[in-house]
Image (cartoon, rainbow, N blue to C red; front, side, top):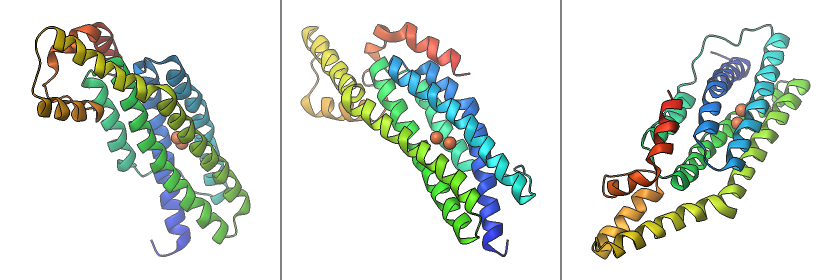
Length: 217
Ligand code: FE
Ligand code: FE
């Protein structure tokens, strides 16, 4: 690896591997999502991702190179984090908020990669390739914005409200915990983790959670 062109091709291979992994992973996220709009956003982005793979393959053809030979371990890790979240079986509203978080990590990772190769293509005088990469970069950016909108307009709020409802149920059952413990438990839930502190509330959504887990395999 001695030239900017080498670095360009290396990163394009990484992105091709990342997109191919996403074509397998996004349908699992769409299935796991409880909010129909979130599920639709994932499915729409799957269609875009298929086009993004084609754009990369067009670029490889122009370059006379193969897209194969690299595994994007960064994307592998991000996808694994999404699978782990689904396996945790959070309550549906919390799962949706968490899926958005994981998906935004994925989009930002792609945005970093596509922004870089777009700039390399410009420097190398490959204007047509720069245009194709810009098109993908725009799609990743739009997807990121849509996810923010879904989170801020409803899904994060529903996740926060679901937590409040649980606390009221617990209080009425007399299972009041110390305020400090509750604060910690709220934070871990919002972060998508479940330290076992709230394990008793799982029954409410157990059926759906089991269903999503089995589809995740
Ligand atoms: Fe993509
Ligand atoms: Fe994407």
